[in-house]
Image (cartoon, rainbow, N blue to C red; front, top):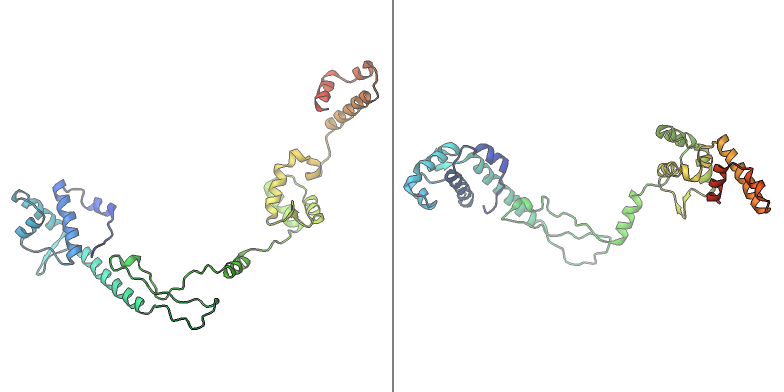
Length: 266
């Protein structure tokens, strides 16, 4: 095997007691085991030579072998590595079989509507990256197919009922008049600007944000307060006095603090 998965968390948990030299020994033995796909030899001297270790590290080697390997007739075996090697070869064989089932057929009047098969790729160095199933149909870039998919997945807009709008407004506590909302969009063919409406709830939320700037009377059905009505009447009197070019005494009849505001408004 030229590739294997390495779980850092598991390794750190199991090897926290090792010294730096023992870490080197264990990691090198793991690579050696996967590469040869065979247990570590029993002869300690040959193992130390392959690991480039001196005699002073014999105890370190024995510690690692005793902690993580089991001595058998074949040599020092490692259960997890042995299982991974077995799984690897089973996966390789499966991908070989799947690959033999693939292959693009010769062109025999194949139409655009038909989807040709592709050859199953097999990565022997890393079988986990190979495709799981043979003859997997590729994703096509055919424009007609993409258009059909969009038409199927796109949801058609459904006009809300009075109860739906009213319940949603009550839920959001926005004081929007549901009847005024429905009448407004019914009159313009349920359009937002020049485009057809896609989400009426989004439009309700837009009415919320514009509630103040557009005027609460148009949205919530409420009338202006008495203070606002009185202010508007005073403003009308001021504008009327200016339009008729009355003397300053007529203009001075309006309270100064309201007159200053009206000048700004005008």
